Amino acid sequence: MPRAKIWGIAVTLACFLGDGATSYSAERIDVSVMTGKCRVLIASGHDFSDACESKVLNSGHGNGRIGFYFFISDKAVLTISGEDRPNPSPDTDETRVDMFLLNLGIEGVPPSQTKAFGKCWYDNPFQGVPAKVHCNGTMEDGSPFDAQFLTDGSEPRMLTDLELVDLPPAVLEALKPGLAINPKLEGQK
Figure 1: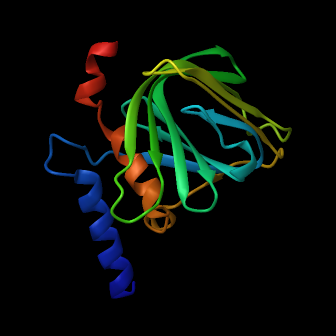
Figure 2 (figure 1 turned 30 degrees about the horizontal axis):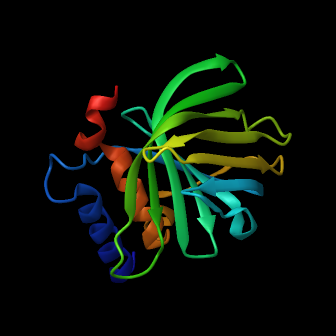
């Protein structure tokens, strides 16, 4: 394995571990890429629908956290994150949304994080037909959010560990909060 790739993996693991072992745990994260059409992306009083790309990442964490990563104009990533809920049916799932992260992908500009209240519900994307992802609710300031994505019917592609290392920095940064419950959001349960 090339030395640069090994170094990249080590740096990424260090990022996931954060300031210390209490910040983030080194647990398994499953990340998949779904392709299709971003139909609606509204948050913080802005309509990002026209700039929303034709792919969305979905992360599943061992601690029950789920994340949806919507790409905006190449670098920026809007992440909707929450706790997995019981499946309403065998072919649907639901997440209780409690956090929003916006990473503009600009060096030196930290991602913004805010509480959110709502849910995501989504179809099983492994059936060979278009599947819906729909998240909506309100952000901490009371402004509504709405995200709607329709897959093209192709199966999601699971990312390998090496592909995770190659994700844009904005996504790697957004993955970190899913590794542990954020103490600021703890009282929201």
